[in-house]
Length: 400
Image (cartoon, rainbow, N blue to C red; front, side, top):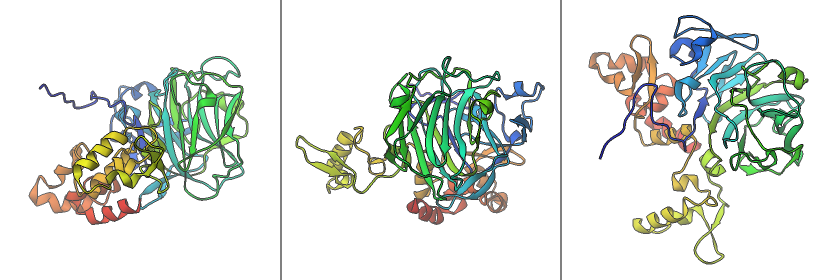
C-alpha cells in the first residue's frame, strides 16, 4: 500500500478538522516564521519582515495558526497582552488599541458552510463591540442591501448579534448579558451551504439560543475577504461609517477555532459532555446517558456501542466518544498520557524551527535546553515527556 506524506508548506489538509485555531500561550515576533503571500503588503524583497500596519496601528507580533491552513493564516497582532486564561493557561487581553487580523484571503467564501467558537471574558456591558469579523479588504464603502455578504459577530451591550449586511441582523430573542466579567463561550454554525441568515445556529455556553432575524437573505460571502478578531482588521475602511458607535473589543479572549463545515455538535467543540444529556438508544423510546456507552464490562460490547452511536448527531458525548474538535483540548489530552506531540515545532534562537526531540538530541546540552525552553507554555504542553511536566499537565487537563 502506498504511503502519502508531506512536509513544508504543502501538506495534506483534513477538511473535517479546524482550519484556523489560535490561542495566546505564546505571542511571537512577526518575523519568527514566514507567512506566504504577506510580502505583497510591504512591497519589499523580504520574506521575513517584522512589522505591518493594521487600521492605524503598527503591528510587530504574531499568533501562530494551529489549524490546518498553517502559517499562511498566522494572525498579525499588536497591543495584545497576556493574562490568566480559563484554566491555568494564558489568554489575550484586548483594548481598543489592540489588533488581530489574518492577511490570508478567506477562509469564508461564497455559500460555503462554516462554524467557529470563541472563549471570552469582558465587563464592558455598555458597549457595542466587534468580536469576529470577515469582509472584503478593498474599498471604502459598505453596501446596504445588495452585493456579497460579510460576517460580523458583535457583542451589543452583552447580547450576541450577527450582521451579514447593515440591514440583515440576527439577534437573541431573550435579553442576556455576556459582559458580566465571567468566562463565556459563543459558537456559530451554518447548518448547510448557502443557508438563510435566519438559519444560523448560535450557542451560548453550550446551549442553543432562540434568535430573530431582520431582513432575511441567503448567505453568500465575499470571495476576497479577510478574517479578524476583536476589530475590523484588514477589511475596507467603510465599516466605521456603516456602523457608527461600534468599537473594538475590550476584554480577554482565550481561544478562537474555525471550521469550513457545520458544527458536528456543541459537545465536540467544547470537548465536554453534560451529565444530563440523553439520547435515544435501541428500538424503544428509552433514552441513555453518555456513560451508558462504556458501561459494559466486556470491551467488545463497549466497542459495539461506541461504533453504533458515537457518529449520530444527537449523541453529544465528545469525551466518551473521543470526538473532540478543539485542537487545543485534544493536544492536552495527549499530554495527559505523558507523550511528546509528534509534529509540534517551536522556534529556537539559533537553529530555527525544532521539535521536542531536539531538546535532548545533544546529551551535554540537554539540561540547559530543557531549563531554557521548557519554561515556554507551548513547549511545556507539547513536550510533556521531555520537559518532565506530565504530572502538572495531568492535573490541569483534569480540571478542564
